Structures are given as structure tokens and as C-alpha cells.
Image 1 (tube, rainbow, N blue to C red):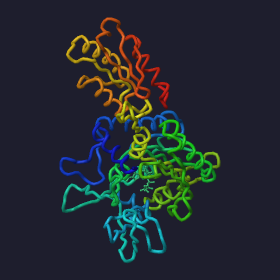
Image 2 (cartoon, rainbow, N blue to C red):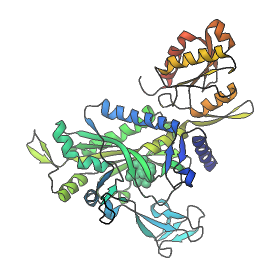
Image 3 (cartoon, protein in one colour):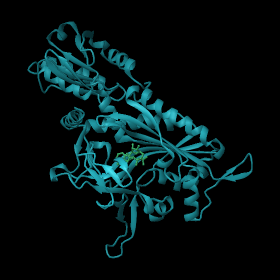
Image 4 (cartoon, helix red, strand yellow):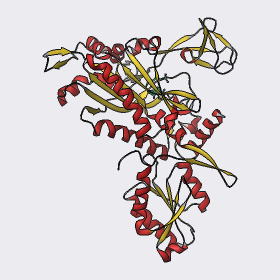
Length: 450
Ligand code: ATP
């Protein structure tokens, strides 16, 4: 059933232009996905809400846009070259490959295959380490290669620019640096649609604090980020939970870590990690680069290497959670209606406008006029490529909150029919009031002030 739901969501995403397989016409690439016209819009809305909440609306956080390709030494310092590996094992029976940390442990060296249930002995099946970093030649010649790496997290761009930002923007602690951007990991266990990709996007904040305040800010960020998903993105509370890492799960540098998990069709899985990373990153980059990455505290006249709290979110996983949360199947007159009940701040279009009959030029003219007026002020769509039932179904599936239909009567009474996506109720509204009506209705359901 859960797998069915996942398959139906993947199919809707493709059918309606949210997500396509990467390089699909050439057979595709595993775990590489492209966002179609509607996916690109929804993804941008998610990023805009995050950026606006943390960079535009706050004084203590500054934005950054650092490069994807980074110097090898960055990852020597961060520990990624040495330690960013997954321990993988193949099931002797079904031959599927798994990350050991994601399998159920039965006893020392013995795990249960997540696909067929067979016992996997990690010694007999020769578990192997795979480094997840993607390397690229940044030299001009092939015969004298010089390698850089595609960053596996946006965070490293923030750490290497810490002093640049501080010196150019003159801030006191606490100060955050935020960035949205692509990250790359050569993930070996794949599947699960856009949950685990080789090229994905992150929204990360490194929040630098005085060491003695780290615990306080760690708790603050866990709470703040939970509220972001439930209030700003509008995910249902019952589908979100916090999971604090046990001591033996923690990365060696992390003091504490909490995952925010979402109830995806395959169960609760990580949406975001919030970690107290201590001063590991700045200390290591200071050591390897031989630069002073400490902060001079004007009050105490002392140098301090700040601790950092890192809320690290995935754009693609948020996108996936939004679609799963909004996806509904309802029975209407004996038929299944598929509808994406997206909150109106995220919907690719706020309204769609159609003429009821496409062989009546005066209806098309009025519908196009209304569309042109509205699209100047909010995202709207004009469509006359099908019968009304088909047009409604299309808009339901892409989450458009309101459909506006111009019919023969509209020419005389200057009124149109507005249909609500969620209730399917229809109302006659005067043409001059259409914009206010859309605004009012969508404001009620929006998680973001307009
Ligand atoms: P997982 O255990 O699921 O692989 P992780 O703990 O390695 O995740 P982090 O390194 O904490 O992930 O990355 C922070 C966030 O970046 C994750 O919570 C997730 O939203 C996103 N992310 C990480 N790896 C991927 C990926 N391969 N595809 C899509 N999003 C990802």
C-alpha cells in the first residue's frame, strides 16, 4: 500500500511536470532527477520562504553563495576525504546493496536484509567502504590533472568564508551564515525517488555562538526548525517528529544532534539534521590553512573559536514531504479524484482561468482578459485545451486552489464561476472582484504573509 502510494506520487510528479528522470531519453542516470516547470516553481517557493525567514527577516543571519567546486584541502580539514564513507554490503540472496547503518542489526556482524529478510553476515559478504565525494579535474590539461571536489554539503563554503564574512560585515556573536545550494554525494544505495540523490540542494545555516551559549542555541534551533516545517511550510504535525541521536550515533565532532523526521510513504526518515558541532570545523580549517579563524570578543578582549549550531535541511526532501503531505485521493461520484492540497503559498499557480467553450471567441477574449489582469499580480494559468472536467482534474492534481470559468452567461452578467479545489464548491463572482476574491481565499490558507 505504502509502495503503491509512492508509485502514484512519482507518477503524478512526472505526468504533471514536477519531476522527471535525469537524462531520461538516454536511459537515465540512477538517483539523478530533473525538476520540470511546476517542480521548479514549487522548489523555488520553498527556498524563498526559507531565505526570507532567515536571511531577509533577521538581523543576526547573513546570506552567502559560495562555489560548488572546492580545494582538496578543504576536505582534508573537514575530514570528508578520510571519513565520508558508507559501509556497504550486498545481500547474498537477493543481491541488493545496503548501507549497513540502515539495516536491522541482529547480532555482532549479523544484519537482516531489508528486501528479502535473509541474514547478512558482514564478514562473509565482505562489507566495503565507499567514499561519497565526487572528484573533478580543474586543470586546463588532461595530462597534468589537478583535482577539486564537488562539495558534499554547502556548510564547508560557509566555514572557509567565516573570516571574510566577519571582516566585511562587522558582526558580534551570535551570528549566522546561511546558504542555499547544490551538494553532491556519490550515493551507492539509491531508490526512494528524490529522497536520496547524487545531486541535491541544501538550505544550511551555520550559527556561530559563544561556547557557553551553544547548548541554549542548539535547543532554540531544534524548536525553531520544527516550527518552520509545521507553521511556515504547513506540514501536518502528525507527520513530523524529532529524534535525538544516541551517543554512539553521533559524528565524532558533534556534541549533540537531533533529526527532524517526516513520515514519507516508506516510513519516518530524516528531513533535516540539527547539530551542535562544537568548534571542530573552524579549529580544523584554522589548523590546515594556518589562518587564524578565531573571533575577537570586544567585551572580554579575548579571542575565541566560536561553537557552531548547524540546522541542515534538504530542499528536495522538503519538496518531497510537501507533495506527500498534500497528496490525497477522494472518491467523488464513484470515481477517484487525485488532489494536491498544497498551501497556497507553495502552489505553483494561485488560480487557473478557462473559457467553458473554446469555439466561442467572445468567451476566450474575456477569459484571456481576466488572465492577463491577474497574472500581473499573482501566478496564474490560462488553459483552453480540454473539456471543463479534464481542466479541473489537471488543476486539482497540480494543487491550484481556484479555477475560474468564463461561460456564456458571463458575457451578459459580467460574472464568472469560481471553483474551490478543496471543497469543490462553486460561486458566481463579478469579474471586477475576481482578483480580491483569489487574494482573500488564498490568504486564509497561506502560511506566509503577503
Ligand atoms: P542520510 O542519513 O539520510 O543519508 P545524512 O545524515 O547523511 O542523511 P546530512 O549530512 O545531515 O544527511 O545532510 C543534511 C540534509 O541534507 C539531510 O537532512 C537531507 O535533507 C539532505 N540530504 C543529505 N543527503 C541527501 C541526498 N543524498 N539526497 C537528498 N537530500 C539529501
